[in-house]
Image (cartoon, rainbow, N blue to C red; front, side, top):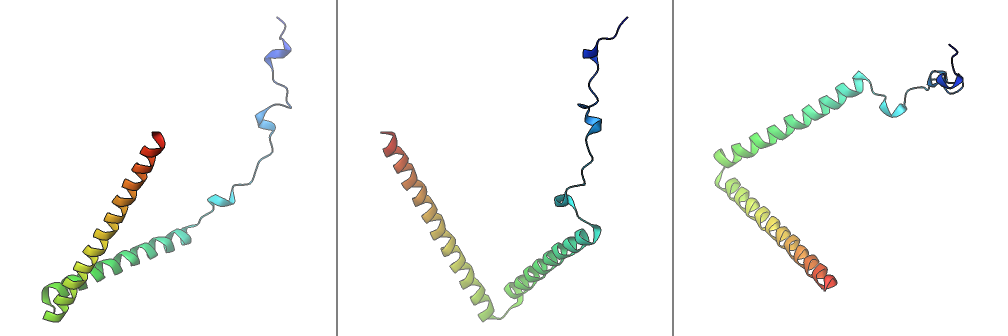
Amino acid sequence: MSSSPSLYLSSKQSILNRPKKPPSKANVSNREYEYMKEQRRLEMLRNKANQTRLRRARELYGTRTERTEIRDQQLNDMAFWKTQKQKRVQAERDYGFLMHCTLI
């Protein structure tokens, strides 16, 4: 039984002989950074909840002028988003028309 040389890999080609690389710097993170990131996120959520709570209190228990201001702001917001939607729909129609014309 002779072993043929083709069954064995050359020691030069072995993956085990590759030099070790240092870890990528892109993946470096530490607990302090992650903790601070999580704390910023939680603080943002607390602020958002507090703003919502204050807005609802003004809507329910505010003076007549505050409630009027809130209603006017809501109407302005609805009008703004309605015009944004109309612009988007018109742009989609124009794009569809242009695509139709190029296919003809």
